[in-house]
Length: 322
View 1 (cartoon, helix red, strand yellow):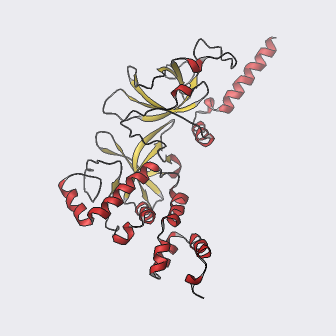
View 2 (cartoon, one colour):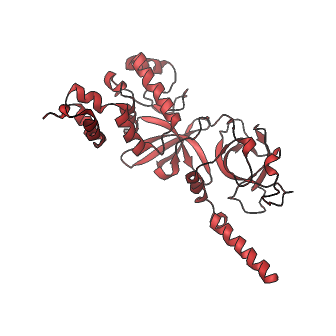
């Protein structure tokens, strides 16, 4: 009995069990299996399994541009165009070119006509081979920084570059666990348009854009928590902070009493400037997984468990005095 004589649902189940390299081998058997083994649904599973934590909608959109342009213009024409003007495609030596996209495809020669029609399969091997520099974010303490990264299969780590007056090297041994896919499609130079400002209330966990007060500096995303107004007694039944035109943003990594811990921001979403820092848009965190990941990065004296111990210590002191 031929493999192709199997019912299609059974054949699909078999193909789903194959590894990427086994799918490539199977695709070389015949035309029918080639089309099946290169289908986007099969390769989407492998991409999400390996790259799902670092590849997001922004990277998919960038990849769509690259592969669509390759199909429309052809590889030779793209290389000729790259030699005339700096772009986001093609080989280079020395200083990085000025990118007009938020990604870079070093080599598109592997995108022949047939592979260019396999969106997910082509993306998988461009990632695996380190040809595709894609947008991601890197955890650096209690902030994340936008970067272009590519995978190094020899070390199972990433190389990263940041645009700040030129594409500067951020690191060559970036671990998987400090990378994430950008959760919003906002370039690091742009003010993020917040859609949650009117709903924010004390104890909400957020990420906020923050940068040094220089026009040429991109934003980073900082972890923070919405706090209470100074005039509030923090009683949940009487708290009116959520109706105030002012937001109290607390950066938990700083100790109590530090001038860096609390900042007052207008709730209108406009950029707010201090003598040395600028604050931009806010993104509210809804996922427990995201919040827990940030809390694990807090200094030991600022973790939720430490706060509970402090509260219990205060309670014991009150009972002792009574």
